[in-house]
Image (cartoon, rainbow, N blue to C red; front, side, top):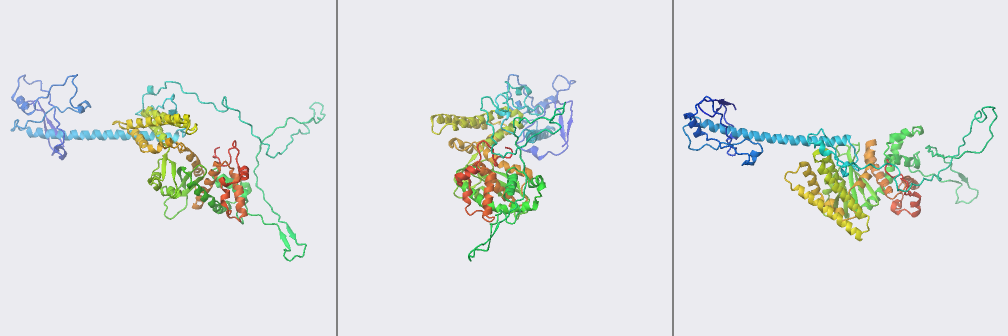
Length: 637
């Protein structure tokens, strides 16, 4: 559309001509009636009114006087900076024969159209600015995850005297003065022995064999440098010891003694030989100690098989023979894992989590190589399950129909979709560490919301402290009841603060998203209040699942399905042994020797090898002292 402004010296108004037809949107009855301001009168006109002035006065009424400074604007939109609409509608009966009347009506309609277009442009601009702010916040949090510290245990937001981090390059960052700490930060604790703590005991290595070594001088050094006479022996200096480790392979050559009959009894064989030494894998050249070392290196210390063989390259271990042996070993641990699953289903409290595990095998009905490890950890056993998908049917199948209790999980939707949860057989307790992480993400991605996030982190830290104080007391005691009441008060105050902020109309979208998530999961988040045995977070399960993540990073998962199932079996067994403080090397050696005695098959009575069924002598022989880390601990110690 083209508008032409035509100055007319005979009229105080500007006449506008439209060359293009009016758009349909401008004729809408809902369009706002936009007026055109009168132009200033020419200076060369006479002071008295002319016929053109009278004509314009009849067509365009004079604008009202400007409001005083003390008078507030009548329309709230005017105070926000919108243009004033100072011309009332044309009188219906004024000057019907005016030749400019139709032009003025059309001009007003065009103004309404462009005013609506301006409002739409402003809305698009506001939406664009909001989207840019969201993307900038996302970039900041992604940079923090990529380049920043991964630890959340000692974040500055948890310290009351620590100022929130300042991002001066962010457009929405708070001023630098606002981030200046009001008090000095608390000094960090020094490493090493702490004042007031007992001195740790020295380790006793008297159980190790002693290999004596004598240090002597050479014939040239054991004589006087002046006269050349030799020195006489004078005893020994103070003895010293060093701990050394020597790993070596050896060939176990077995000689079976043969005996000849010296009698004439017909029921006795003429030649009697010693029995054959049992092998855990018949016709395999490797003994039990080799397989125990390979299994521990791979599934307990996250060491790839080819790296193990490279370290033992002087012993000439064949990769194909090792791989084939691992495939045969997988069947020996299957009965143990089945018993662990039965034991897990009998518990009443679980930690559940999942992580991806690549399996590079083409399987019918499975697209891609992304499989998943599911973890189900209870008080005395741990079960890892390998599955193709990440849907709710996996935990449903594990728990079975008789499971009753509480499951500590994150906020993944598959747990909420479980049939056990919908039918009320299982209740979900949600992790406070994941909820706390939402506030940390807000604090890192939106610097101007740092103070708000720090306040909520302090509330969550107070909940942890009060719950920890409550658990130190005996149940049903008076101190327990007092601290339990303090905990419930803190939970109620947090709930009221959450509800109050959610009722704010102009709440920041980032705040609203975090608080709405907490409101949605509030029942599961506060389940620990009424059930003191329920933990506040799922950190124990995530620490157990960490070995799978380390193995995935070190050797990229499994090459085929049987290898992934063997990994699940070994992760389950090693984590369960750790719970019972049993030495994994001793247990694996004893169990594989029992399999060898059974002819390379699982023992008939598998239950006697479960940690809770071991005899007192077995527990003492396989047990791990309290001050030693053991074979089944985390790979990083």
